[in-house]
Length: 226
Picture 1 (tube, rainbow, N blue to C red):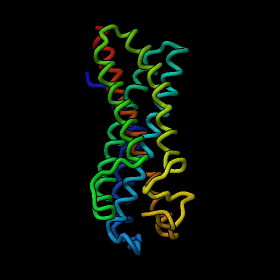
Picture 2 (cartoon, rainbow, N blue to C red; picture 1 turned 45 degrees about the vertical axis):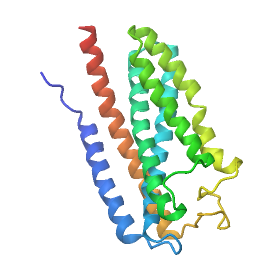
Picture 3 (cartoon, rainbow, N blue to C red; picture 1 turned 45 degrees about the horizontal axis):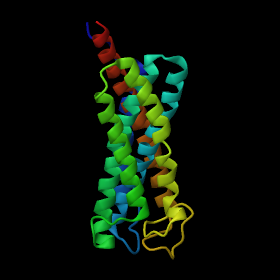
Picture 4 (cartoon, rainbow, N blue to C red; picture 1 turned 60 degrees about the vertical axis):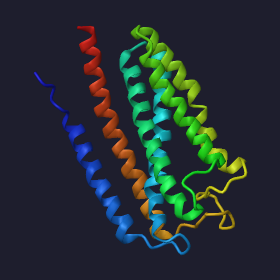
């Protein structure tokens, strides 16, 4: 018998869809064109929001991994692994959208800027997590390894965030940045509203996706036990 989807999850999923559509409308028709970058700057709202969800996912994964090490309850391991999967997807979206923005602004799809380098390393660290976990057949050992890995791997997240503040970079510093920095831009009220709304919408989307993926993980775990 198919397990019924919780009403709250259905409502969150519907809210996530509505909010995402609203974000697209706001970004396309409500936000003004940036004076220097023009229309390509609108990619920024999705780029930043995807990066936010990626880092939030890895934080949730680390916290869940720590709770698993203390409780040994498989729910936390499943939650941690699910969060890593979602985080990796959104990190890749962040990297791809950043490349689309970079082509007309920097005249190149990619450059080994400190921010781009650190976010690539972060993505590779979590991609390795998924590959290595699939290489361990014993469930308990895999879960313990995964929990420790997410705690150690999370070090790459704050390093990625502060890289553009510590190192010489051409990547824009939107929050606390300066117009003198190459590619940087200030946020006027409509831009700030759109960014805040986008961050909130992507956060709701993350919550819905994490709940769905965790439920699927629990079903897979029960199947393996049978």
